Length: 133
Image 1 (cartoon, rainbow, N blue to C red):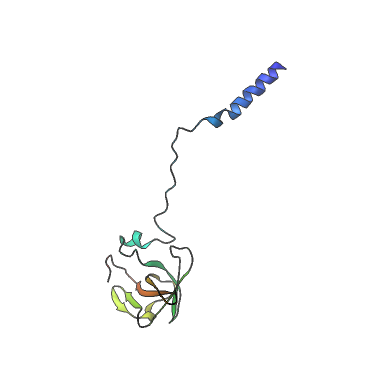
Image 2: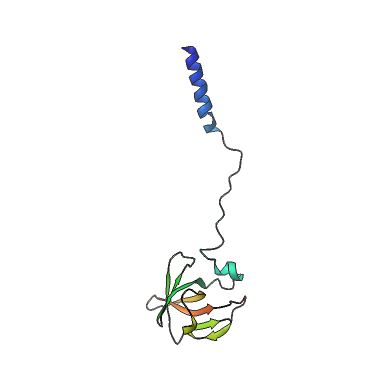
């Protein structure tokens, strides 16, 4: 009987003995990714497009543009003002009808004070330079 108790006590000590001992290996916190789903403006351009939203054009009409695959993880809709929204393609002024679905773009957003809608102030498409046009 004493032999069984000794074996049981030894098994319990061996099984639970390591619970109170701290690991000597330092645990590192996981690093956050430096990019969103397809990258941030900072990672791709050295920070000059930090106020822009990068994404893929999901749909575009004369009144709005919808971006997919943004850093927010969901679609972003921006209103378009034909008179105020500027479109720049390959560093040169361009027209809104040159923007195609599936194309990667940068959008400079601006919040409308009256309605609260997000307005696309500027859309950059094509080859984006490392300095603002």
